Image 1 (cartoon, rainbow, N blue to C red):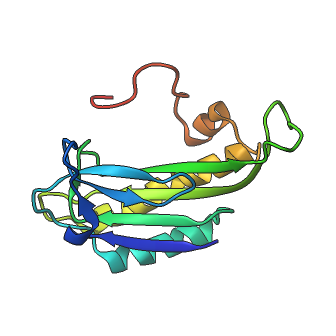
Image 2 (tube, helix red, strand yellow):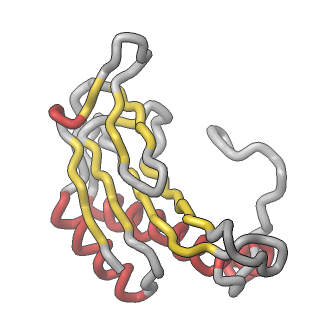
Length: 168
C-alpha cells in the first residue's frame, strides 16, 4: 500500500473566472476539485498526520494507494475532514454477485484547515477516523462486511435513507 501526505497551500488553489469559490485539485481515479474558503487558517501538523496515518495503516492495511490532503484553508462545507474511495471496475469481466469486480481502488482523505488552533489530539482522531472509512469500504468491497454488520460491530444503529449532513 502506498501512503502519501500532500500539503495544500496558497500556490495550490485556483479561482476560475466563473467559480464561486477557489479550489484545489485532488488526484484519484477520476480526480476532483475541493472548494475552500480563502481566509487564512491553521493547518494540521504534517508530521503528526504522517505518523498517525502510518500507525493506522500498519494496523489496518488497505489494498489501494491512499492520498491525504492537508489543507491550510477551510473546506466550504466547514467539516473537519472527509474520505472517499474510488474503484476501477473490470467492465470486460464477468459479474460476481451482480456486480463487476474491482481491479483496483484509490483512497482519498481531505483534512480541512481551521480558523482556531488545532489540538494534536484532533489531528490524531481525524486521521484514524477518516482512514476507518477507507477500511470500511475495502471490507465491503471484499464482501467481508455489510453495513448492518458493521453498525452492529460498532454498537450503533445502521444508517438508513434519512438525511445525513449538518445537524445529524
